[in-house]
Amino acid sequence: MSAPDDPTPEPKPQGAALLRDAALRAAVVACFVMVVVALVQGNGDAWLLLWAAIAILAGFVVAGPKRSLGVGARSQTSKPQQSSIAEAVLAQIPDPVILVDQRAVVLEGNKAAYGLLSGLKTGHPLSFALRSPDVLDGIQRALETGEPLKVEYSERIPTERTFEVHLGPLQADAPSTGVQAGVVLFFRDLTSARRLEAMRADFVANASHELRTPLASVLGFIETLQGPARDDVKARERFLDIMKGQAERMKRLIDDLLSLSRIEMRAHLSPTQNVDLASIVSQMIETLSPMARERGVVIQAKLPGQPILVRGDRDELLRVAENLIENAVKYGESGGRVDVEIASIGPSHGEQGPHVTFAVQDYGPGIAPEHLPRLTERFYRADVAQSRDKGGTGLGLAIVKHIVNRHRGHFDIASEPGQGARFTVTLPEARS
Image 1 (cartoon, rainbow, N blue to C red):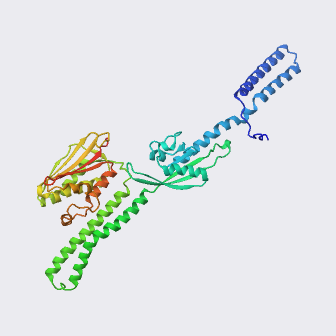
Image 2 (spheres, one colour; image 1 turned 120 degrees about the vertical axis):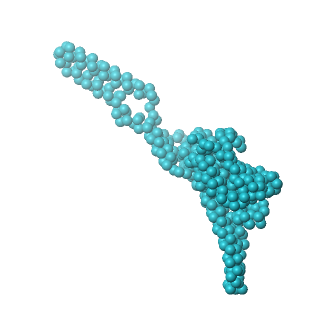
Image 3 (cartoon, rainbow, N blue to C red; image 1 turned 30 degrees about the horizontal axis):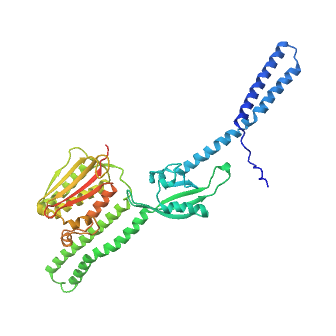
């Protein structure tokens, strides 16, 4: 059985267009010659003029209709117009969107997709830029079943992020529309939602443990004041001072937990403003100097005379300087001195470009080696009793670490027992 004829008209070859143009030019030239001959003879030969008119009409009939109707122009411009509309729509979608064909080769992607996957290139397999077996297998399943599905994709560099990928299959349409079979990948960012879930769990677990002791202490003193010590003035004054200290401890703990939560919520968003790190550290030294004098500690600063610009959040960097300098004063006060230094350096930690170091050195008892790897964990203390006596919450260095990570920097701790401790923050230097 022979296959039915394809109703779609085939495009005419380019040679036909050239023949039509040549015929038109020949007809016009012949017409012009005949008209000139008739005028020169002056006999008004009507038949000659009639043939001239017929030649003109024949030339336009042979070469004109296709061009006048503009069929060729429409067929050539329809696909570019559709492509430009698709690109404009994709550009307005804030989430990453990628279109691949049946072989998982990238056909199109929006700006957010190229920002998420640095190796993404049109015309190259998606696996070159996205090494996720779940997503690549999901593309094949969507093509086989013709049904949309969802898979999860996670990346851990430079920060941990999680996406829900919607895979929508596209069925091939008529050739004239230019739609071919493939899959649309839509990435929905779940990072903030997952961080919020983790922070809620951490808050319940840690806050309930850390708040239980001061809260029980406050309740116990209240019961004592309402009972046996109701009329004891001296006991009432002493108990009220203890209750005030416990309430302030709970307030500091809640403030630190809220600060850590806010920082973690924005951990995947790098700061975009340039700030002067030297002025930030100088301001914090001035703020903490009265507390240092009360404890008999001298803060010696070695700061550059010119601004040192880094790309960062001023409030968060103030918090970094406050936590490091205050910890050095409190826990290293036996050394009597704290050194604060800012210096510009070259490439650091395997990263190119200029960097800035902010270092705080104390000369106190130091930290045992077994504690160093865990100092930046939440609620971890090398000496629990000493930390609580000095008003520590166990969250200060965890806050520093998360802020430095958000600024795409590095936080290092070096210490030896009896020789103090040195805390160093390294950040990429910003161009002025």
